Length: 198
Image (cartoon, rainbow, N blue to C red; front, top):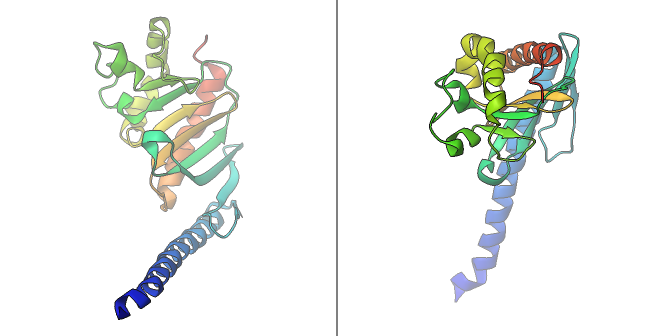
């Protein structure tokens, strides 16, 4: 009987403890992102006390942002999204890191299903038409050679007015963010000068 009287207290105490742990983690991330923003000569933008916040700045003459986002569907965990402005007049693409694993061979090679899992056109999981594959390979060849190991770790997203690199988890290292910005700046130049045409 006595244990039953204290059960609600233990439940409430447990919930409060979990909340305090979560709140402490978020505040630690906020401090780290303020520090990173200062080291990068960028601005830290608060998004409320329960979010990490966003780093916003300019690199290579282009605006960029770094923030933590919740994944969707199978990507339910947290991702660090590093996004840079870019005018894309070509095909919007979503390239998973495994695309760069055996470059220049298309993953799986023999089936559309495996290929479709690696390249997504306009947020729809449809395979890239055969007529664009050679051009897409050529587009990414330079990046696969120079930065393949890094690109394999995340996802490249080429939208209409941005290019981004998504890394799983919370990136806290300045070197990783700077590497992503360097690759994105080169990708943005390539996208604007020679997009993968429709």
